[in-house]
Length: 117
Length: 111
View 1 (cartoon, each protein chain N blue to C red):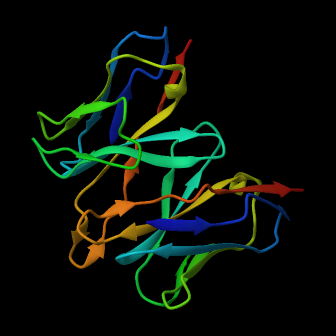
View 2 (cartoon, each protein chain N blue to C red):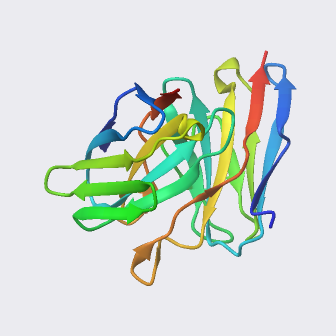
């Protein structure tokens, strides 16, 4: 089972360049999330989506854009990369917030390690 | 907003028991998750508590006290492979169902 797949796994960018990180899930999950993880900061939510065609801002959305055109894919875009965006980016998905009265855990991809010079 | 506090690092001996505490302040609390994250890997789900009390799952147990804003993760019969970071994550159920993660507790298991 593939689960949550992130591409690319590693990338080095120059300041000002743009790129898109792709997240794909094959579990038919409604909810998808993008986090960044920095040393000493923990996981912080960038943007999330509660269904196809919807997106919402998380804790640290500035400098990022997202799109959820298909249920299985959630794209994270950096329009003009900055050194402060050097981080490990994790995508996650969950079936829904609540199923049968029980909150659903999030399943994470393996991460994308992004360095911006 | 949410404020989550857990120890930064802990060390324990193989075969022993260790308790990792987490205190939180959150609005619209709707349960708490614990995740395990090995270095360089993705977080993986360990446990979920929404009612007060202890949930046991093999060597791992998780406890919740909603009135005290307190949870702990208990690891028994520690193994070397348990060396990892453990993330406490309360769920904000006030409409958005967002998880907020603590900074994690790095557990080192020594022989």
